[in-house]
Picture 1: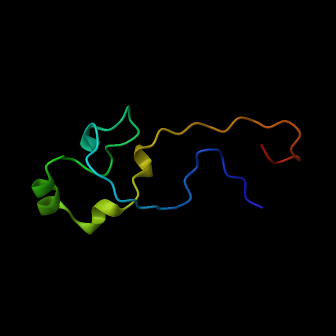
Picture 2: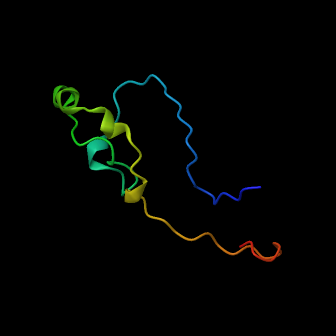
Length: 77
C-alpha cells in the first residue's frame, strides 16, 4: 500500500466552464496560485503561451511533513 499525506497531489484534472472571476489569477491567492499564469491580459497570455507552461511547478509549493500517526507498524510514520 501507499500512504499519501493529506493534501498531496496525485494528478487529477477537472475542467469546468465559467464566466468572469473575481480577482486576478496572475497575482496568486496567498501563495496558493500564480504559478502558471503571469498576466491577466488575454491577448498577452495567448501570445506568450508555450506548452512548457503546463509542466508541474510543485517546487513552488510550501511543503510540511505529515504528522506522526500513533499505532502504525514499525517503519511507518
